Figure 1 (cartoon, rainbow, N blue to C red):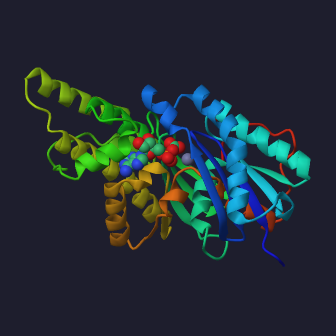
Figure 2 (figure 1 turned 90 degrees about the horizontal axis):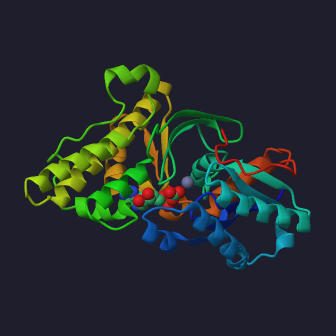
Figure 3 (figure 1 turned 90 degrees about the vertical axis):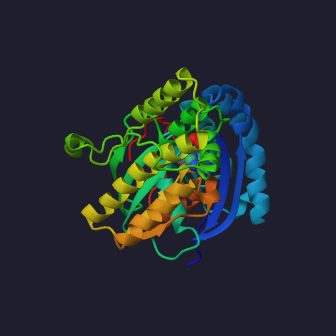
Length: 342
Ligand code: KG4
Ligand code: ZN
């Protein structure tokens, strides 16, 4: 039997993504980002993101079909992110996907964005994916997930209780006078700094947090600690050692993320750790994850960056799995759900 060809649409945040996957083979991954329009606001503005999706969705769809060398009648199904994410942004993708499905008669699957991030690791491989723990860290989400089966056994272990990890990078960059988006800027500045210069707090790692927040994250206290540290230096008329502050902050984030992720693998007897989201690009997060996973005998998987950040291919890959497992398409009245649970 021929492998299904699925087109995936992703519009949960600032990336308009349309990807096409045949079986486990990537045929196209077209992405348009509205990040340039958010820079002056210092963060993703939901209304601006939604408008940008309306403008980008059809050109991105065309680009994906061109890249794959396919026409719509060669597709077997359409998959679209139905949540979680920005409500208005999600609605553009869901609306476009429904229109496309209605016009072509193709089956349509509304899927979970976070599960899509995990499915990204399957692209270019064989099989249905092994049991894994996934650490998904971006500007919009920070989640630790236990995946026993991508199609129907995915458990949320923990999430951030305040800021997302990427958001913390963006806020601390602003404190240090670095441009938005701050993640890559801090990563660059930190390369010349001493990560042990300042001991910043590790959120939700105290013994009292073990019971209720074992796998949860918190970054707002860390952000405040950095702000206080910088203010105290400025008040004293001392020049802020940007590289050291950046390196010490980055260390605190990377320490907590990788410690909790590897602990989750060990405690649940899982041998694979998958990283996803824009923060997976962070040099220290990758380094510490590799170090700690190796020490614990865990295999670390980091998909290529284009598949780590938000994209349509990961949604297409999840759609392929649903088709292969004979799942019923979503009812035509499914909606966009900004807080969609797994
Ligand atoms: O996945 P993504 O492209 O979009 C969503 O947020 O959904 O992630 C963007 C986030 C931003 O907050 C950005 O600052 C952060 O990922 N980021 C990084 C790095 N590159 C991007 N954070 C830390 N280190 C990096 N190298
Ligand atoms: Zn994402």
